[in-house]
Image: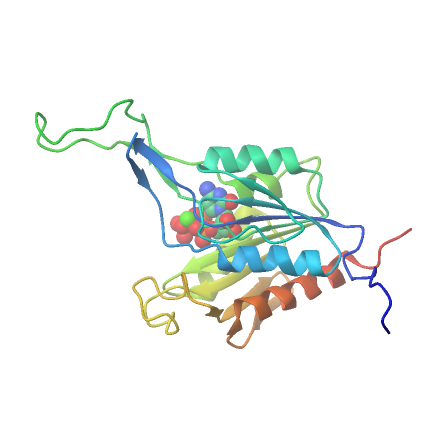
Length: 235
Ligand code: CTP
Ligand code: CA
């Protein structure tokens, strides 16, 4: 008691976390985004650091302070996030909590789009790279444990199981982001922006239903499970 704490279940490990939304520019003043607050991802990064890990947090635009003692890479777009994630490898575990925009406009306008002239500006969309799937399916340099999230508004577990298979990750942390599923916040978008969350941990081993808890508690629980999955550090 009273000594300096140097232990921690993740000491010596490198944990990579993505968090927040991405912003995909339409023109110099507009972008495509989503309601992700970054609270869950940032809480996971903080919990991993508290467990002794070296943490790299790749964050989209959020209104949150950088967690203390963590290397934070601030990015805007999905493509920037992918580049920052690749630059941060190797990692022992990677947790993809970011709500990456699925689409971006195919050709960003160099000037502000004007409503005069053409009746409606045509916004052709193209799909963003899937960062989680790209890392999980790597032949070389794959983190030993790859964890994805799934934000669903219906059939939460079934969709999460399909995602687990499709993306090739080890676990999916699934949550219900429907308005009534996200009873906490009372705002459209439900759990996004709220402080608590009820999740299901989906893996090849089965499905665990975790009770509603604060995002900090869920982060601690997930980090504890990551430490168990990685096993004791060989030294
Ligand atoms: N993800 C990612 N890159 C993307 C899209 C998603 O890394 N371009 C990651 C998210 O960080 C999350 C997981 O994939 O960990 C699932 O995200 P989700 O949006 O639920 O899945 P999608 O495959 O995009 O499917 P959909 O949005 O159609 O449900
Ligand atoms: Ca998506």
